Image (cartoon, rainbow, N blue to C red):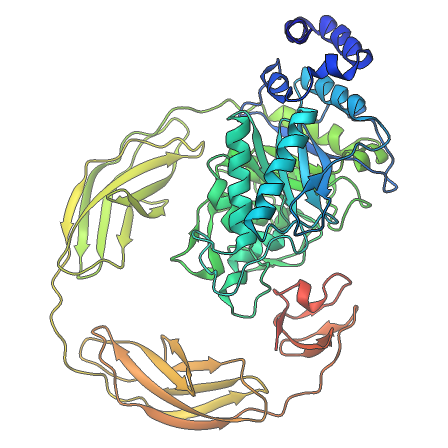
Length: 621
């Protein structure tokens, strides 16, 4: 019977409908072929989703929260991908075992609904977690239970993939786990291992998607939880997971809602609910960014076809609802490079034509709102009609040096040509990428003296096509001439200002035969490195006297003698309890849950912006 059903699914639409009717009426064992039939389901005539398709992804409620219940098979056909929400832990957040029970219908009916949607070319994915489904895979045993239980759920219902929607405290970083490229925190490493095992088990057609909040991705640009610098340990905690599975990740659908203010790549805070916010947040994952602003730990961009923008379907669905008109302003800029006069400027002015589409929470709230989201956004995405560009740019030529130093090399080359225009050049030293630029020159820094390097350049167009590598250019860096002369000591050190938690110092700059590169300000067991003849030392204790020693440094590593100055911080202002609706200034203090927080950014507080929830606004004192 299974073979017969598979053949019928390959026929015309009328026969498909007859098949679905039969599947609904037949016993469970006949419809699904018994245990382990998910392979048949995934190998059947499920329409593929080419990377150029503009998708609408929606979450379907396996519960009723006031938005109304809709049968899975009755989901609007304007949705391409349906995320079934949610599979949740059955033995506590740390046990690892995940369960799923259909709401209001039987397992057999849900299986039939999944197969019906698949016969229409839809993908049906099981989503894990959500606001109430905390999952913490702290041990290998929990990881194994997670994998085993998810294999069972996916096999039983024939789901096309897995969506990771871990929220709350599911993911965090242990103190010292500061490099997203080599994570060590068990809840991170075990999740990565589990995702890869499930993908390997079900094959390349098995889909992997993620729906993190901005706090777990974009906040990682300003704060990273594992650095131990006072940031929430959850800040940026999705980054190591995304990085480790980017080769099998179908798309990332960051929730552009229920978010505090976020610092974008231009150093400006953006708040949700408008076109600027959506453009700025999407550009961060399309461009990449240095994690915790550390340029040596750069989170590489995702492909445009791996980026989906997550939005609430209406004002009831989540904070930060954005009108259709405002969303389309953002999409015109992101897809086509058509500006709308906002503050944020795209790093790629041509836009990202191959971005994947939109996600919404949720299908049920869209239906509650008379299908405004799916109807109007479907029409917009269908009108794009993007023709895929597969032509790679020409190879960069005439790669040459314009300057060679002891630890740097300046390169230049002849521009490449392309049918739609070159947007970026990637520079390689051997097999290692050392940087990117939109122009035709680049300075490679941080090289070793008296060493030969081999450089190549590749061109990239806005569709992501990459040229072949240029002819390799061998360059030898210069020899360092020893410099025994230290800088002169800093003089005339004065205290320019004080607060309860900071002291600002200035001094007369030092001089040196080859130039002063910076200064070190030491106090107690701590020190601060600055480039200019001034420094503001923060996170100090109130009403406390400190002794500061200032030392100048030159490029050869020579240090001057030190200049010492004493200064005392101001008396600490009394902190009052944090409240919503209060206008806070920089350095204002407020107590929350028995802890004192210091304001980073002027703002008027809102419910949901409690100090521990918005590290962009508050730091723990």
